[in-house]
Length: 359
Image (spheres, rainbow, N blue to C red):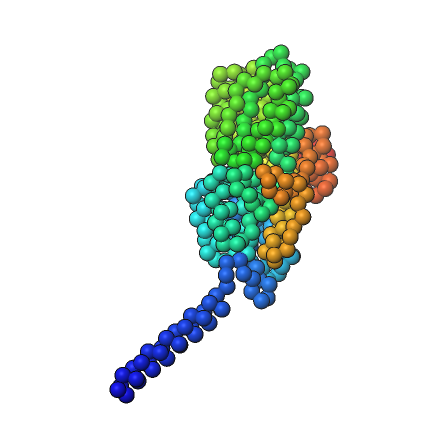
C-alpha cells in the first residue's frame, strides 16, 4: 500500500509542477500586439511593389525615421511584396505571428487585403491602410493624399493645355492597377475632368501592377494606330507616364505631346525640366509617412486617433497635393527643399536646369 500511495503522491506532484510551469509560461508569453514594459513596440510597415521607386527611396526611410523619433525603443518590421498579393499575405501573417503592435499596409490588391484586415482584427492588432484604401473591410484608419482629387487635378491640367489642339485628334488615358482601389479613385477623378472637356478619348488602359513596361508596350501600340492624332496622355503616375514617353521616343517622335504623371519622382522632375513630361503631383511622402507613424504609434498604445474624415466607412486623413509643371517646379519642389539641384540636375539635365533657374 505504501508503494501505491507513493506513486499516487508522485503523480500528483508531477501534475502540480506541470500546471505551475504552464501557468508561468502563460504569464510570460506576450499576447499578440502586447508591448514590453519598456514600451518597445513593434510596427509592421508593408509596402506593395518595387516598380515605383518611392517605396524604397522615400516611404521606408521616412517612416523608419519618424518612428525612431517618436519611440527610440520601437522596432519597424519592413517588407515589400514586389507586386504579389500572396507574398503580402505571407508578410502580414509573419508580422502577426511576431506579435506586432500595429500594421501599416499599402495594399498590392485592395480586395485581397481585406483578409489581412480580418486576421489583424482577430489578433487585436490595429491596422492602418496607407496610400491605398481597403474598401471591403474596415481598417482602423486610412491615411493618404486625396487620390480622386489627384486624378482630377492632373487630368484638368493636361486638358487645359491639350484642348487648343482638340481639332487634330484626342488623348490617351493610362490608368493604374485594376486591383488597386486608389488607382480606381484616381481613374474616377481623371474622368471628372476629361468627360466634360469635349476631348476625344482615343483609347484607355488599366496598367497591371502599375508596371511602366506594360504601359510603354500599350502606348507603343496606340502610337502605331493613331500617330500624330495623339495630342496628350493622361497617365495616372510617373511610372506609367514615363512608359508612355519612352514609347514616343522609341517611335522616333521628338516632340512628345503633353503627358501627365503623379508622385514627383526624381526622373519625372527631370523629364518636366527637359520638356518631355507636362506635369506631376507633388505629394511629399514625408507628410503621409509621418502621419502614418504617429497614428500607428498611438493605436499601438491603445490611444484613440481623431478622424479628419471618413472613406469607405473608415476613419481617414486625406491630404491635398499640388500640381507641378515647368512653370512652378522651382517654387514647389526646389525652393521648398523637397528636391535638390544636386540630385536632379545631373549632366544630362544641367542645361535645362539652368534655363529653368534651378541651381
